[in-house]
Amino acid sequence: MSLLDECRSWCEQALAALDDAGRGTRREMILEEALALSSMFTKGNGDEVRAAIERGIVLAETFEDQDHQLQLLAGLNIFLTRIGDFRGALIVAERGVVIARAAANTAGLVMSDWMLGVSHHLVGNQAEAQHHCEAGMAKAVELGPLNANFFGYDHRIRALVALARALWLRGFSEQALRMAQQAIDEAERRDHPVSVCISLIYAAPVFLWSGDLERAADLIERLVAYAGRYSLAPYRAVGMALKGELAVTRDQAGSGLILLRNALETLHAERHNILATVFASALAEGLRKTGQFDEALVIINGAVAQAASCGATFDMAELLRIKGQIIAAMPRPDWASAADCLMHSLAVAREQSALAWELRSATALARLLSENGQRDQARDTLAPVYDRFTEGFETEDLRVAQRLIHDLA
Image 1 (cartoon, helix red, strand yellow):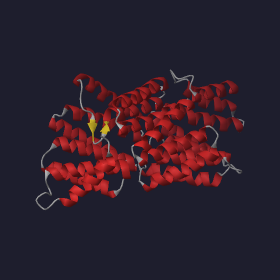
Image 2 (cartoon, one colour):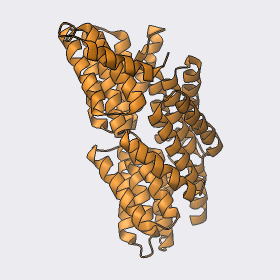
Image 3 (cartoon, rainbow, N blue to C red):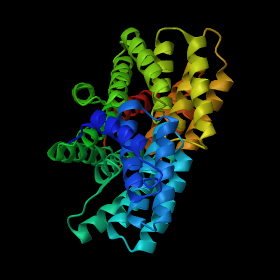
Image 4 (cartoon, one colour):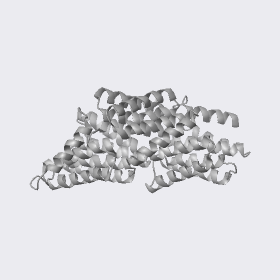
């Protein structure tokens, strides 16, 4: 029934009431799982959530209950993505594959593929993300109807939005937009609050990245209202941060900065860090647009360091691009450092198979070169990247790149 506050309250009371004979039992395992799930969605990602999940895993291993091991590993994977430990989430997804194979659990194998797809997307392996999401979809078709709900998440919805985002990053924006809409439609048909919020949180940016700001705005408003209705405080804070990012994109940086600062404070308190670097980069971009260059540089340097501490993130190329543009916009710009940042961004985007980020960085570098009189080099930087696209020529980034190539000709 998605009464998560009620669930958390009763689980806490039940666990407190367990006597010695009740501890270490299947009953405790089920209560720990439900407590972790309900607490994570309503209170954020505190140590008590992780403790409950890990206690449940120990009990499931004791009972050799592989189905519950998979449920709880799915929970740990979700928890680790939410706190921003994407490498740890990938390791847990790989453990899930081992358990599912040992149990010959077909639904578990599908879910494990989808966990791998989401985790690879977040660490920046977009080709691998697409492969695993699509492999899970193909297996699910062979199996027919299956329960893809593990640890309160519909993993099919989670995989659909990861696939939509990976497709967009790889340069297939038309396919990505269709997949994002499919995820939203499927989540709404199931009418499960967490799944609806997940679809809106991760599909709305695909429309935002593509330049369809009206559609993105509509989805974000729906997210804020829906998360508020079901007491999903972290998701409502994400919605407010997305509103801030949208405002910055629309050159309404003043209002965007207020929304972003307030939302980031809430998300930090709840350790909901999965999109922390994304929103920090939007904050830095808003500060750049309002001429607050020193603070913008501090914020973006912090986001780059946070992403690097994870090994990498799906938005590392974007962070480096924004840093390069901040350096170039300062009153005394360091052109060489700005160009180095943009070159590094290009290299990261190529390594991650993220053609869309590569285009943004190539466009920024081409502008920088052009402003310094290197027009031929600017065109030679941008045109080959643009020429690798096969679709999405009406999206904002491709229109901007095409106009710049034309101007440089």
